[in-house]
Amino acid sequence: MKSMKPEELRKMPLPELRKQLDEQKTALYQHRVQTVLMQTKDTDAHRVMRKNIARMMTILHERETTQS
Picture 1 (tube, rainbow, N blue to C red):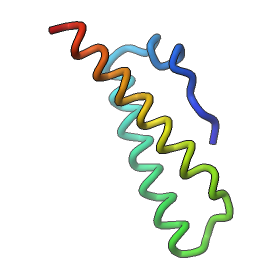
Picture 2 (cartoon, rainbow, N blue to C red):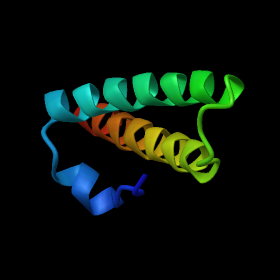
Picture 3 (tube, rainbow, N blue to C red):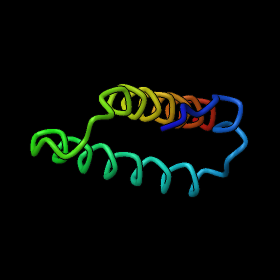
């Protein structure tokens, strides 16, 4: 899993960013399930996914506060 750069996320249109956020949350859930079932060895991906989600949520919040 590759971490996303904030510059890349800021260039995305709002609907695409929200869609990407939903996809990341789903992927994180699936990764948690795989970890519990001992089907994955990539423990670093969990941390990267959480940080990507946090970056996306931060940028969404920035956009919401600047529009108000």
